[in-house]
Image 1: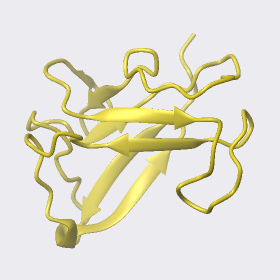
Image 2: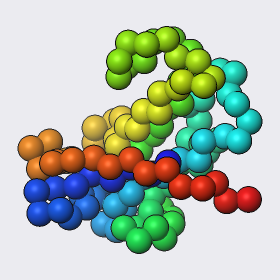
Image 3: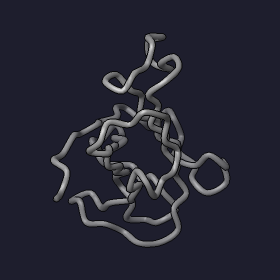
Image 4: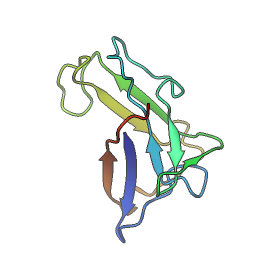
Length: 115
């Protein structure tokens, strides 16, 4: 799953502390999760360039995959077939500063898992 933020001129907004970080990607586990996952390594959290090339370096973002509890989006009950994926660009609010007025849309893409 890939997340992009787009500004008013249809350009991708930098999402991390690295200037080429335009996309956040997570890999949803192939096996159905039975509990919430907050480990960015387990979810394969990665920065990508706009064309999808992985970027190494310091990760400011975090992610959560929730399969239990209540959805933060619509209040529905979460399950292993109805989950929330929540991206946090910079949970410390110290490395990434995006002016919310510049964000015109967010795109979420699904891509086939490798392997």
